[in-house]
Length: 214
Image (cartoon, rainbow, N blue to C red; front, side):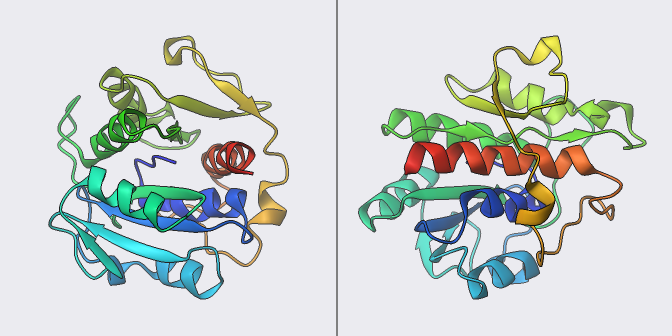
């Protein structure tokens, strides 16, 4: 599952569940130290994650890999059922079309597809973001898709998908609140009551990945 924001990781893992072998791969585009993430530490302690991998300049994972491709191969060879890839907490951004860390999701999707994997993109959506470029479907997701050769976009049932997004796979994510119970959910300082579709969309990506893995 390819995430463009670190705050998508927890709901994605909730969708995958605790009974699958799941690895977390942190790629450059946000904070570099893996241990800086309270979310990853909590997911690891709660048995949602089996291992953590740091790529390139990222550091502090249980495994260190030079490239995204080598990290994906390492997880496959370890026998994991799925991987969740994301930038660290925070994000590098310039307000421009391609000048942001979210594009790391495109690199992950392309590498996964080339290696025979099944890349799923978790879309970034918001109903309340004050910035027009992130309201509705974020321009980060659209820019990422422009650079992806092939990936499935998971979309929560009940929310109309923007026409410019193209084909999506609709997922019934209505149980996301119950599944995420006990996990800390926060997107730009906003919680689940303020950003329900943001977390539902990420949870949908986890559910779709689970359906493909089992």
